[in-house]
Length: 207
Image 1 (cartoon, helix red, strand yellow):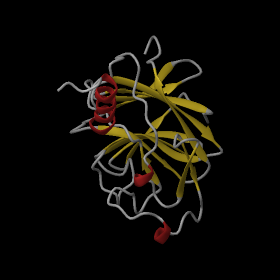
Image 2: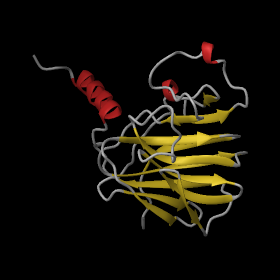
Image 3: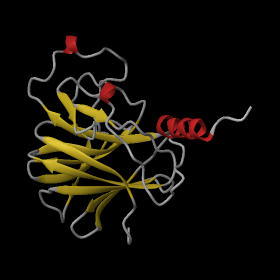
């Protein structure tokens, strides 16, 4: 018996979220929210789980639902949608944060590690008014971009590239060569202030 169209569409959307099935609109990037069950206890989500804020004290670990997906040692949260193909673009508004990391991580990375500190995640780090790319705790300085109000990230899965984008000029500032071994999800870490994500965007022309 054939399933009603509405139910088929719901099943397809669920598969897209869980397993990174390529979207129908290939030009439009992934649309994601932040996954609360991965968020460290010092982080709080807001604005429909599209933003994250850091709290010095945070929530008492005993008041946070226990699960194996939650980051235990570092203030990290992952997006709820995985990518295993295609080109995707999203933006991040930075609010009162002087120390954060943004990028992607393999969904099964260790929950005792921080993004950028192992070889399962690739990030751009901002701290002490300087940008660096990070992989396996190795840093490389990035020039040509100052303290941002908003930045973009461009992920090209097949080319194994993650790029930091200056949204004011719509230009790539720096590109990380990656080594994906499976699906990846947007990844964020911060130690002050707030980050607000903007997803479901088309890749800007020229990138």
